Structure formats: structure tokens, C-alpha cells
Length: 139
Image (cartoon, rainbow, N blue to C red; front, top):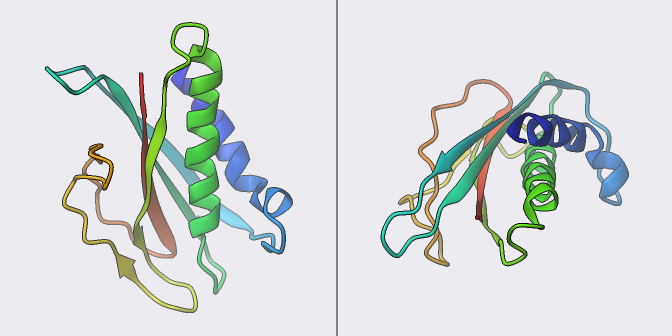
């Protein structure tokens, strides 16, 4: 299931300009989608954390492509698991890190907690024109 969701996320990143009006097409040089499956602990339900990294050599940022990758990957997981639990939620979408583009670098002040109480996975430093976003779907 995660393999299919990974492919869906990569395809979503590549199709961002057709999905979002006025978003220009970008020649992506790399898209990576990773998952972390976390078991339920006491009051916190199990969840799947998804991180997407997108890169390009162009003079623009790729945050929209990475955001699209995460959402499409998690929607794919939802679609494949909805027969078991229709109450799953996709929450805590957040730009964690961005380098390059017109506005330069951005690193979110991430305490590991989302505003809605969800948990973000730890992220590694990214190099070049890349960014990472994270999201979680409670399952």
C-alpha cells in the first residue's frame, strides 16, 4: 500500500501545474516521498507520517509540488483504507523547510507538535532547491 501511495505522490508532484490554477510547470529533478508508520500509544492513535522532498535546478521554489505530493500520497492511503476506517483524518500540513527560489531559505520553527495536537516526524537537513513538508493521517 505504501509503495502505491509513494508512486501516487510522485505523480501528484509532477501534475501540480495541471491541478492548481496559475501554478506554472516546473522541471523537477527529484521527488522523494517517505512514510513513517507509528503505532498507537495510550491516548494517541496510530498514524502514518508522510514527508515529501522536491528539487529543481530552476530559479523557483518547489513547495507547491511537495505539498501536492504529500496530499496525493495520503489521499491514496485514505482511499485504500476507507473500507476499514472512514474516520481517518489528514491533518497538520506544514512547510518544514525550503531552500532556493526567489525568497531564499525558510526553516519552520517546528517543535514537533502541530496546532491540532498531531505529531510531526523529525526531518533531515535538505540541500539545494528543495523543501520538505509533513502531514499525518490517523489510522
